[in-house]
Image: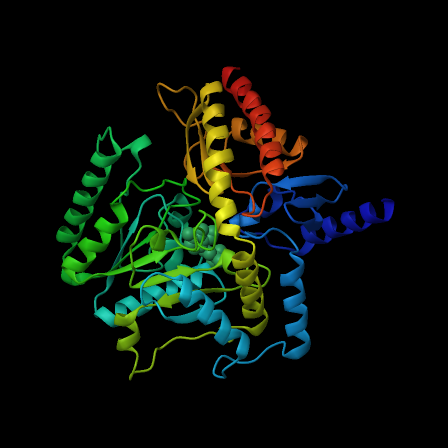
Length: 447
Ligand code: PLP
């Protein structure tokens, strides 16, 4: 244990000296050292075992160190560790088939990227070139990635510092009944009015200038706002009416997170382009992509697509995807995630919402849930500003870690996003810790 602690101390010191971290003021962070992980748990530099209710950045859908996936990566490394994208490769071909078979409709051709942001970058480029139109409509309260176009697509405060780096993005409001922009009181009203609003934005921007509407199937980091029944289908219909392409970002929602392969497929909606990453191989090797439907595919049948990446369809990443999808199919991981949501996480979170005065709303599906924290249920005042933190949220995180739970938090929310393979016992254990964390939040708000 002493040697392990010594080595963790070295890791930490070198990190602080040389690693430039994402989204951070470099001198103000103290990253937790992680020395090991397995299944639903990670081990920190002090040897503490924490239950991972974050799935890291909501990507380890089959948990940490799944032996079948680790073995597939090792086998592939021995066989062929890398090969350029212009060649055909067995793992890339198989991964493309397995993904295409799971996407809705005829999204049958896969352009592989390194992650979610570049998947959205390429989806936007494809939509603009196919339609010959410049603009893209995206939602406020969304996250689409950290590169120039993707961060401009994003509708949260992380965009502000990068505003203007990509032209032609217009934001609109999506449905969010708990904080309705449309003064709606029912899901049906929220749905109808959100669609009316979107149509008005389309008309005022000029339909002939709009290449695509791009949106998350369920906004993830922005708050897991499950859209009312009919919303996605309504957006599809509106896009068809105006000749606009529909791009659905399933980077966070895809591959089991909601108990289905894709939310769009679940809802019977077929986008023109679908972007994915994260759960496709649980992030064991970086991989994302765009599933391309007929309209875009035909456009590039006899004219070259002006875009590519050195590591597009990297064999290690694709081998990891093939193994991941086989494990998920064999073990019915989606069914497990769906049942956990319906029978354990949903009911338990609703009970917590009853019991704790600071829980304004809980919402989600599968292993994809948000707990929205407010100073009181009447005013619905968030305990932290959008995109910011507060002493209450910092206190919640501190309490969770002290009790052995690694949480995912954003703004005034705690997200309950364990691996899709989390056992029922682990889920209940984590929810019991969350109950204690919410006791602490109640105290901090009352102070
Ligand atoms: N789109 C969504 C919905 C996401 O949640 C994310 C990442 O959190 C991204 C895109 C960006 O993916 P990446 O970080 O792999 O570039």
